[in-house]
Amino acid sequence: MKRYYYTLLVLALAHTNLSAYAHTCPDPQTTSLQWGVPPSPWVENPFSPNSPQGEENTRFVRANILVAGYGQGVTCTYRNSVGDFSILWQVRTKIPARVDYSWIETMGGYVCTRGLNECQFYVADPSA
Image 1 (cartoon, one colour):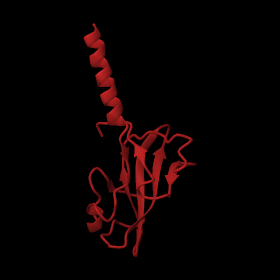
Image 2 (cartoon, one colour; image 1 turned 90 degrees about the horizontal axis):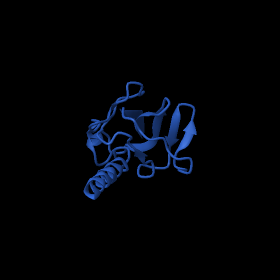
Image 3 (cartoon, rainbow, N blue to C red; image 1 turned 120 degrees about the vertical axis):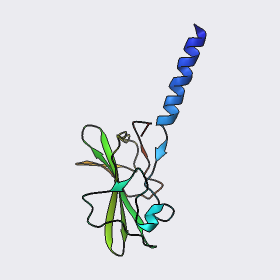
Image 4 (cartoon, rainbow, N blue to C red; image 1 turned 90 degrees about the vertical axis):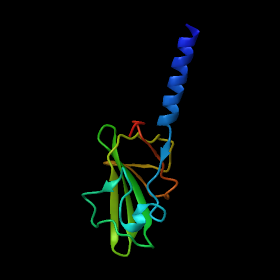
């Protein structure tokens, strides 16, 4: 019986570790964004004012967690000489804690403008 409980404990801890992995927006200097291609599983945001452009001076502007009861996805916005463009990852995300001052609650979700590495989010479904 103890072996059964031990196995359950190990599985629960493994699941917790997998779901606690922090994600960030893709770095435009080190991912396929440098060629204008969103890295998988990200796609071009259909509401983006511009398409992703492969440009050396592309920089991160902000991240948004889209909320409709629970996190429905993340958009990352970047800026270059053409203008702003954004990419989207449609995945269930965890709502940021109220004590996480990187994320500011807005009407449609949460926004983070602190920086690429400071805007960390957590995926609710670890298989995503």
